[in-house]
Length: 76
Image (cartoon, rainbow, N blue to C red):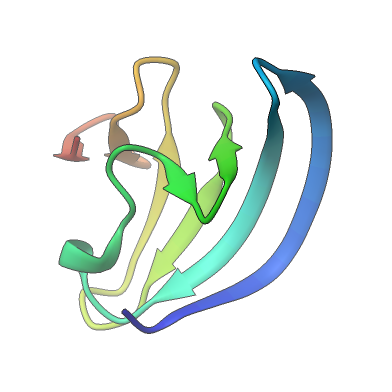
């Protein structure tokens, strides 16, 4: 997985996990994390990813699905 973190913001701790909002880059849609976890950290709604091959900016919704900017579900 070629995942490059741009930024990370701690939101809270929940059930012993660090909940974070992140911005990161991946090469392909298949590399988007589902479920929305990076290591031991859980991603929260509003996390964003740039999918380089497809030229997409995607956003994590409250249900844990990745959506494009038009509101179309991409993965999850």
